[in-house]
Image 1 (cartoon, rainbow, N blue to C red):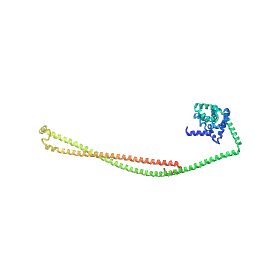
Image 2 (cartoon, rainbow, N blue to C red; image 1 turned 90 degrees about the horizontal axis):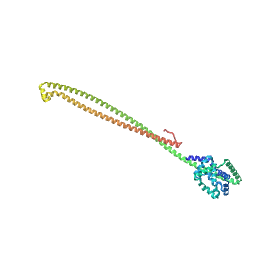
Image 3 (cartoon, rainbow, N blue to C red; image 1 turned 30 degrees about the horizontal axis):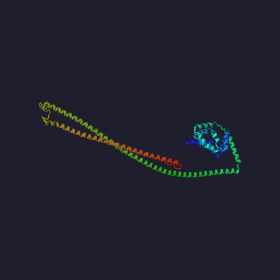
Image 4 (tube, rainbow, N blue to C red; image 1 turned 30 degrees about the vertical axis):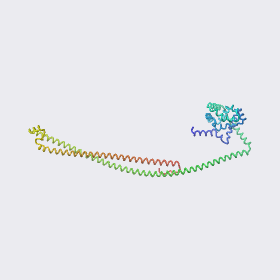
Length: 420
């Protein structure tokens, strides 16, 4: 059972079941219970009651712990659990049933014992008998079978009160007043002591509260300073953010211009390449036409040469036109060869320019890729800077907010205004 529930059960037993009344008014109610127990013994165990009267063994000598501690002082827990259950079900009168059952089961031993032996029996031997759970169960069955009428208990209570009043009336008034005076003096001294304790506790509490208040005010000052510094950092961070945004905008503008320049260069290069391709195609077409014309001329010359008998014999023996009239043939074929060489030279120049143009195009593409990579790196750094700035700002705001909320919860009188 948790401590809270156990304490609630204790409060219930003390107030609702009347156990607290046994401790009040100099144990008056407890003495009344002793008187009721002796009366019940006189009715149900007359021989044992007579024996106790001979020994001058009164109920408060052996039964005080039974009523005040509910048998928990000496008896084992297996028996105390049963008694507690019966107490919660039946009330405080169940103690009389258990006490009478204990006296009945120990009647023979008590009748043979003297004063010291009876006290030792109640203190030592009686609790040992019920260490076994079976003995405790039989005792509880016997206690439940004993009848203790409520009317009879009330009757004995009235008799005790009457007897007590008669004793007080027979007592010397001076002694009674002196006893009452002593009781009142003791109560007054107790109240004065309680008053002093309360005054001391009040002063201590005031000092502690004052110290706590001073600490709270110091903490509030520290938190206010931290709040001001946080606000200043926030302003600086916002300024830095604005500056970074301007730098980012400038970088974006620079990249945009570079990209536009690169695109224009690409367009120019593409136009140049297209023009060179067109020129090359034109030159190739022209070269093909010239080659076709030269071939036709050569065919005509070959046909004319083959028409001549001497030239045909010479061609048949040598297989070429170089032997008969090399000077005239070379002079006739020189212009086409020179033009062909010029065309070839121009074609080589065009191919060289085309290769250079392709190289420039590749370099432009590499430069564009490098610019794109630099742009990506810069955008990543800008985003990381934004994220770090945002996380730092958010962390500082959260820490300042938690610090201000904790300070306001601890010190209600501390200042709570100010922008968040």
